[in-house]
Length: 578
Image (cartoon, rainbow, N blue to C red; front, side, top):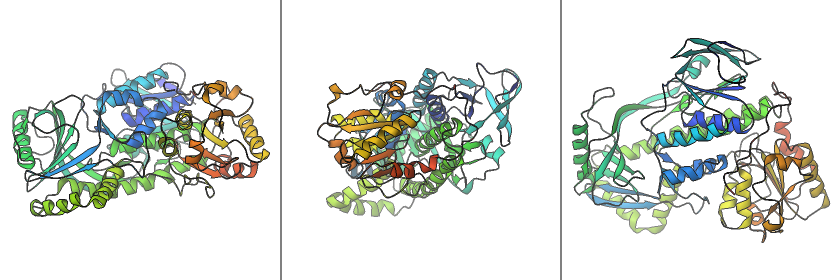
C-alpha cells in the first residue's frame, strides 16, 4: 500500500490521504500526525484562502485547540466576545452576557478571528509535525476495496497521479468530491440567501459585543474583529443575487443606511475589503463514511451560518475521527471503534440542523410585526433577571458546544460513579478551580494524544495493582496517572514526554494537593475515571478493579484492521503548554 504512479509525492508513502486543507482537514492531519501516522494533505486550490466565511471559535473548540497545543496562538490573534446585544428600530432591547455557570470552562467566551488566520495557525502546527499542504492537487476519482483506497489526483502543474493509501478523509467542503464519489446523499432543503462583508465601521458603540439590529423589516448583524474599527457584517436580505458583481461603494451605502436605522445612530461603513452573497442550505449525510473513506465538516453537512457552527463542528468531527483512525491503523482497535465515529457524529449533525434552523429564524426575523413586538418582549426579558439568565444560558450556551456529550455512545460503558457522567467533558472538572495544581495537571494530561486512566490513590490494594498492570500493558495508547496529595515539586514534570511516560515502571503521579480535582471528578480513594483522547469521559467507578477496567476497554479489544508496522512512529505529546 502506498503505491504511486504519475507525479510522485515527497517522502515515504502516507497512511492517510486528507483531501481539503481548510480548518477541518488541517485538524484531521494534525491529530493523525500527532499520533505517528504519515499524512498526505492535498487541496485543489492554488494556495491558501484569502477570504473568511467563519469568524467565530466557540468555547468547546478552544478546549480542543488547547489539547492540540494551538490555543494560545488563537487567543493572541483574535478578540474575545462575551455578549450579544439586540436593537430594533433604533432602540436597545437587551444585552445578553455569556453565562457558562452551568458549563464550567476555562474559555467562557467566543474568539472572533478570521478563518484565514485560523487556517494559517493550523498550517504552522501541522508543519511542526512534518506535514505540508500540496496546493493545486484535485481529487477527481476514488475506488476502494478491503485493503485500501486508490485515489486519482490531478496536479495543476503536472498531470494525473494514481495514489494508493490505506485510508482517505474527505474534508473538501460543501461540494465535496469525496462525498459524491462515495455516493453519500445530502438530505435536507435549500434555505436563505444572505450577504457577508468585512469592512471598517465608524459609529459610537463599543466593540465589546456582537450587535443584532432590526430595521423594522429585516435584521443585520455586526461582529467585531480584533483590529479596532473592523467588523464582519451580515445582511439577511441582500438586494443582489449570488454571482452578481459588487459595487463596493453601493454595498457600503446600503449597510450604512440599514445599520443606522436599526441602531438608531449614524453608522458609516467603508467600502468592504471583501463581500459575498451566497445561498446556504440545510443538509446532511446519513452516514459519515463508507469502508475506508470518511467525510467531515462541510463535506458531511451544510447549514446556516447564523450561530457560527460550521467550522467549529467540523473541527470537532476531525478530532473525533483522528484518534479513532490512528488507533485502528496502529492495530490498537478495530471496526467497532471506527463505527463509533458515525454513531456519535450523525446525531450531532442532525441536532445541528435543527438548532441552526431556529437560529436562522431568530437572526433574520423578517416579520414586520417584529418592530412592534420585540421591544415589548425584550423589555420583559431585560427586567426579569432569572428569565434573562435562562435565555443567556440557552442561547449563548447552546452555541458554545459545551453541552455536547456522548452518553449513548458505545464507548460510554457502564454507569459512572463520579461527578461527571460517561460521555461528558472532562475539561469541566479542570475549570472549577482553574489555578489549582490538580486541575492544571489534568489540563496538561488532556494534551497527551493517548487515552487517560486517572485513579485516586488510596483504597483497596487491588486498585494500585490494576493501575500498574494497565500502565505496563497499554502504555503505547494509555496514559495511567495516580491522583495524589504529593505536591508537584515532588512529582515528575507535567510536560514529560510520552516516551518517558512509557518507560516509567508504573503509573505516573498526577499532583492534586488538597484533592480539588478528585472532588470535581467525584473520585473517592481507589476511584477512577477513563478519559478518551478527545477529552470525553468513557467510564468511571468507585474502585479500580481489573474486571471493571476490562469492561470499560471492551470497545477497543477487537481484532485490528490493517495494523501498522511495529516500527511506526510513536504518538507525539504536545509540549507547548505547562
